[in-house]
Amino acid sequence: MEKDFEDRARQALAQPKNVGEMNDADSVGTVGSPDCGDMLRMWLKFTEKDGKKVIDRASFQAFGCQTAIAVASMATELLKGKTPEEARNLKPNELSGELGPLPPMKIHCGQLVEQALKSALDGTEPDTKAPVETLAGNLQARSSGKIKIVPLDDSASD
Image (tube, rainbow, N blue to C red; front, side):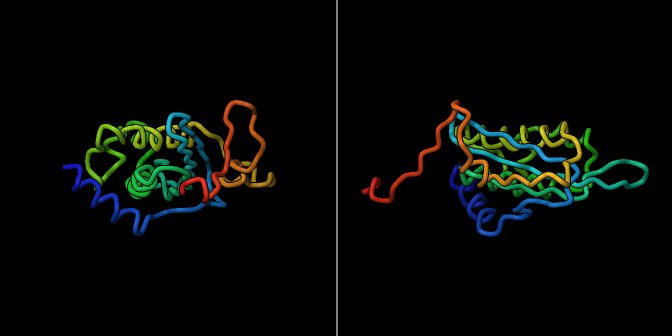
């Protein structure tokens, strides 16, 4: 079973969908997991369909584990056409879509995507006049003292 998951995850990583920031997003959610060092930002763009507010587009930017990237790719496809309420009620195992159930040691990846989605759904319209922060920029910014990011030297892995 884990081998099947690895094959599906590898396929999702080969061509991830909806990667990158969305300049016209209506809301943005960012989360990070100090347990594994993963960070994920999700952008949502809404439209009206049949008198309901629905997700028109979703995109993401991720730093960290490959499973989180694969789940985020699947989730952004799954979210299209869902109302905010429908999206909010999706569980991590549903967000993984065609990847299927996540192995126990990867469940946190689905939870990371779920938390970014909920953060975006709780967000407000971004200030288009303010400079857009990127995930990479956040990683280069000075730490608030809670987390210290230290780049590894290639020679350290020898």
